[in-house]
Length: 129
Length: 356
Figure 1: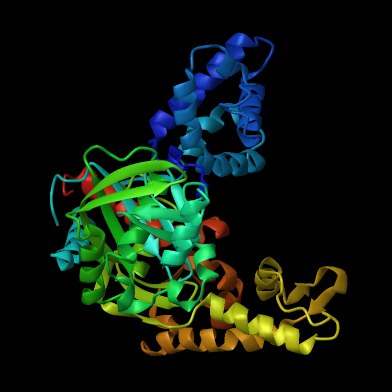
Figure 2: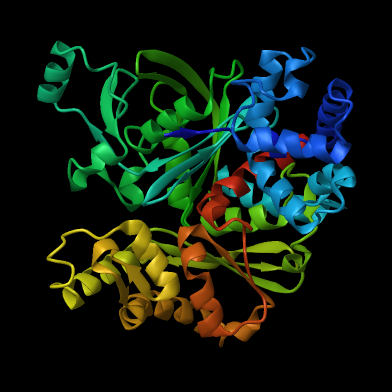
């Protein structure tokens, strides 16, 4: 009945970009022959195949710098964003190196929620009192 | 609204067809069905030692229930409609089961619950809030498959279902920013349609602000359409289907979009005319909503949510020819979560602003 968590989307864009950049850094450090594009592809393939946290096939995850608890946490946060990454990869095959931050940031606009919007919500919630 | 009391939170959309719940940790969806075990069943299962081994069984505050599909198989008493559901022994129990599923460990500071309900009904909202507070002073003890979790509900609030859809569409996942892709939904008039399993609800937003005085619902949803379509196909193709009593629900949903029913060994059936017949009552309901405003042209945008929104999107576009019809979630198979997602984003926004 329970499905995997989807809370990766809770990360803000800088957190998510930092996470992915870190993965790519570790993967390329452990596998100097890999380009950053190939590293990202490998990470995504691992995510897609659901291996993360289980068979630990990704070099980024076997490097020891990411603890099993951290992996579990990441796994819980990755699923929903994955589709966005895949979609972006398919539409931007030539820009993998710059994709990470951009794909994560794509959904969130620059506009903060304004006071009118907040007040409109509070007006609704006053109906709870 | 109580400030400063949200340790963790859950958004709950207890639809007539499915119960959907989200927290920061997990999401859960299960068929809407709940029935208390009879004394006989309780005895039997207890003697056989199966109470803690059956995935469909939950013990909530000392009472054992069947939940989900297994409850629905028990009979009509397992699904309550309207006002009768908003009591702690029903809605409260479903909320407790949902908490069990969306939290690995009960949050130490308690759980704030945002529950959705049909639009413009203050009594539903009040009863919903009271039902999750429960009669045991906000305490919920849930046991399932040998695991027990004890929850404290800090407080609850209600949100109209289409309002949840709208907030999901315009807010980014952090709740405190607007989504860039749906900026037009915050300009002019947006008509929000939440087409659920058994009901279709609507609301209006003007320049990004919801008009809480406008809204309503019809007791007809996508499951009625699918039931009608199934009966029509079985009747029309009785011989070819060799008297099949049930048709494949996934193929039925596909048929609504394509006009073709994939009957596996019996081949692909042309059911376009039957689809038209099955969807007409619901489309008439939608048209009735538009006519309240003199036609659909009153709205700059039409926003679709609910599982029915995903299935009927193409047909609605084709029938009503509005230039801006958008879905609340880009993933059709996530659209039934739109209301609950909107509730969760609303909570995040309120938490980020210190309002919760």
